[in-house]
Length: 357
Image 1 (cartoon, rainbow, N blue to C red):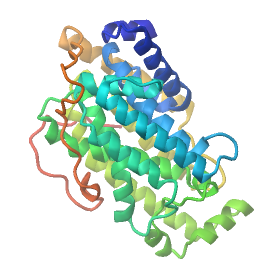
Image 2: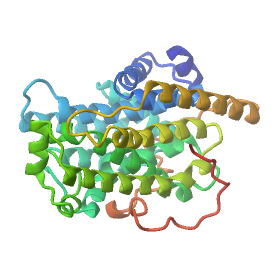
Image 3: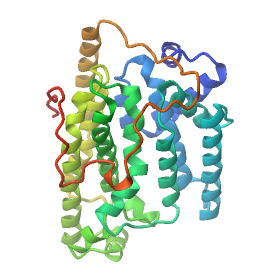
């Protein structure tokens, strides 16, 4: 199946094929929900998505999982080396690092704006020194680079039925919604890494601080104040999903089943957290396997139907002559990467959004 994907995408160079395979393996191993959704894309588009995920996963692992007992200096050094490799790869298309080689090839093929990758690396660097966020606006500034830009990177690969800049705010919002879901699910694990992503003012509004979170994590005991804060963060996250929803209908029809499936499964993390009594400080909430299977089966039917309606697979993009031909929109300023949780989405003309259940 990997060879079929690479052949369909027109990737023939042996070193490039090996790099893309490496990224695909990272996706399959670490991003199970994301990988499942990716299987619903047309075969020729999958390698690019694997490359984007593989690079993001690699950088995130440097920040969170680099070796046993690696200190801040070692992590910072590894991240600096990755940034140097990225800069070189984007400049000349060559790199000894597989994830960078695949990423830069994808950026060239799809004309992805290089600023999006630089903003992502800046957010990863912030994780080395920033341990909490005072307000939701502050958190959104971080998530521009850590999440919103991922949605913007994906747009050229997925394709749109409206001008790309019209779909961009919704793609950015969906990236943020996915990350907010992960923040809620991973409160305990992030606390062990010394980080609290839930805004301090939201926590304080319920009488919660880092010390109370630490007490709950260490003692295994619940506190109604923590539950109330987590419930508010869940409601905030659901609001961002509602903002992102209109963007699904703006995507190319053959890409919608993939993103719709990811939308439902990531939003399902919120349901799992609530059904588990907001016990995220004590264990990780998971979407039930049966639910995942039902959503995946529905996505497969929708994907087959979309491909039948188009009549033939989408063409793969022809690599542009220069490695830096930015056609994707430049990412907006950090705090405006997507509509805020209480701001209405910009009124636009788009096909009626499909019902997402």
